Length: 145
Image (cartoon, rainbow, N blue to C red; front, top):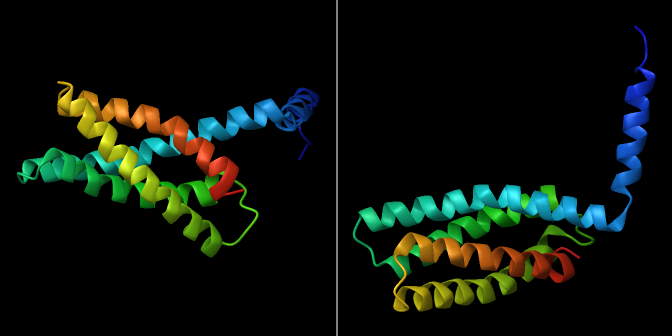
């Protein structure tokens, strides 16, 4: 069986070289954070939708959904996005502290947007977008460092 074509080897070398550039590593990590975040958001929004259908208050439903999404986020981030320099237990403890702050931020921002007149889904989407950037920074520099 013949080896890889010369073009394929060249492409592999080029991709390997790109992966060792800090800015590109940061971009790739952020993209992975966003992509895996879609799964976490799906869990969050799915729980919120179910709880709204059951008659729960939107802020309480979002808070419960946030917890489900956060657990999904932690597992994906630990195993697929970041390269932790410490154990699952240490990252888990740090994540729980960050999660507490994120829980408050999610609920407060969501409630503020609702009070400002936004409807449930645009308010939740806005909250999610804002917290995506904040969460990535906290995870990168502290939780999974």
